[in-house]
Image 1: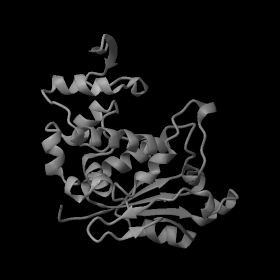
Image 2: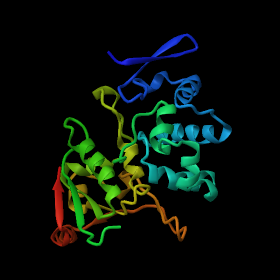
Image 3: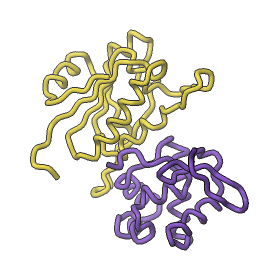
Length: 112
Length: 136
């Protein structure tokens, strides 16, 4: 049995590492609940990254590794955001791993 | 950065679906890209089908992972080669293949497509130059 998280009264299955089991089920509320579990309050800056990851997945069918995310964010959202210091300040458990989890994506490919 | 940089070549010879080789190979390349080695990816024989445009996998019930090849540039894999003879034998040309872009973040130099179609002699030469060859 996988674990479940409760979002607005609805149950969603997650895997043993907390990633959403079925990425098609994702709703924004899931990110909020996961963030609360990690003691984070989501701001617009967090949402920029979460939405960016979802777009990246939509286009490339892959959750990018952290250095790829950093590079791609710099390109899309500006150089001042395309660095690991900024991304870690938003997602202290690792920008790729934690933000991908909030975004309902699988664990990033190439995170070793 | 490690002091010793080895030349890794990943050789893909199989069609994208029907076996797990193509997807596994792509995952290995992407994971391995984290190690800052000199990586190249070669497509030969039916492997050239992995890069064809407009793949539709609905009927076979597998995930269409062809868009993922376009992230190779983001993962700093800058050498992607396709054997010209293998393409020709299947009635394909470079126009039938997806394009992979790469941008150097430091210099902002952009290359629209790093996929190179090369003659068989060059395929052999590149293989000879490689320190390690992974065959899929």
